[in-house]
Image (cartoon, rainbow, N blue to C red; front, side, top):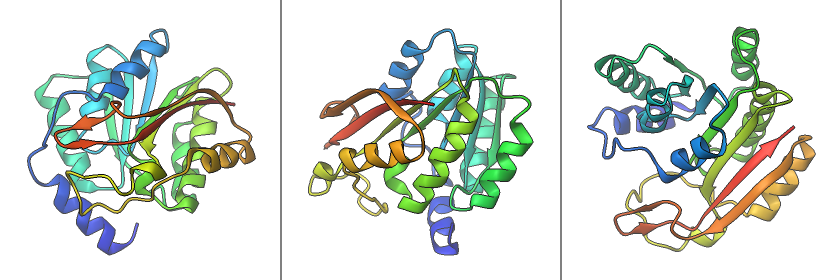
Amino acid sequence: MTNKTSNYWNSFYSKPAPMSIPSQFAAFSLGEFPEHQQFIDIGCGNGRDALFFARHEKKVLGVDASQSAIDVCVKSAREQGLQNIDFQILDIDSPEACDAFYEAHKHEVSDAIVYARFFVHAISESSERNLLRLASKMAGEKGYICLEFRTHRDQALAKETSSHFRRFVNPVDFSQRVGEEGLHVVYYAEGFGFAKYKGDDAHAVRFILAN
């Protein structure tokens, strides 16, 4: 992550969280995989979804590149008395950091649900590749990868947070890249109403991937 990007997100997450309730996608993902015990939230932001998983007695690891975001998450987990959740820094832009992260956690991860909401469209295509490769290893043979992000059809629509960098992703092109990484799609849906926030009704896509 560049210094400019790091400064932006550290400033963004240093402010009070605009929303602490879980996203619709978090509730959807938990409902799809009630028996899985480990959730890894990549790009966890203020921790709203990671904390939700932990409150439902899952073992949770939340990661983000922003130190401010991690500080907010740790404080929230402590205030809620949650012992089954941890938060760590991870820069998904760095393949070396992703490799080191996997090596540090591979012995404690077993068929995890790897979760990333509104993260794919916030990173470059090369970082997307790092994400898919790391998620594939963390999910293993019996885990899954749950992704939700804005599509190319959302580009011209109203945004509540207009200053964010966004890479509006064509789901068909993304599906092709998923296949190139040896993953396959087990669930796919796109449309409006998945992630409505005030006047921002994103055209979003949901993927569940598996090895």
